[in-house]
Each structure stands twice: as structure tokens, then as C-alpha cells.
Figure 1 (cartoon, one colour):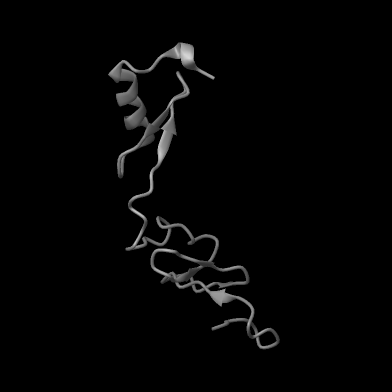
Figure 2 (tube, helix red, strand yellow):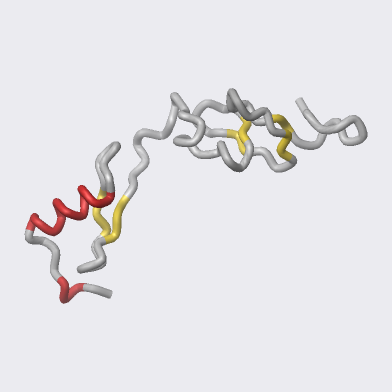
Length: 96
């Protein structure tokens, strides 16, 4: 339950990240692993969530044509944009 101070025992919770345990008055509950985290460890990546939403999509925006390029898992922005430019679908006239 709560992890607050003695005068506010039901306010806030301690971060469940191994080396943190910070008392956070506005904690975040991960929708993957259902654990509670502070602001710094709230993302899947920051707490290495074993039940991360692997079906989620991330994109990189091309500076040349403003297209949104879907990235593959563990792919860097530069790699996905480089492949897009080489594909021939990058059209500078479409830049917004």
C-alpha cells in the first residue's frame, strides 16, 4: 500500500526499480509488469520491462521529405532514415 511519511502514511509509493526505491508522491504503474516506478524509471526501457508492449510502433521523421519511417526493433534512427533515402521513395518536393 502507501509508502509515505508517518504524518502522511497513505501518500506516495516507493519506486520498485532495484537500485532506486525513491519515495514518489505521483508514482507511475507500468501497464506491462504492473510494478510502481518513479518519474525516472517509468518507461519500459528505463526499467527494462520484461513485459514491454512489443507491438508498439516507433517512427523516425525524414528531414528531406517529412515522411514518417517506421523503425524496426532495436534499429537506430540513422539506419532507418538511410534505408529510406536509398529506397527511392524519398521525395524532397513533399517536404512540409
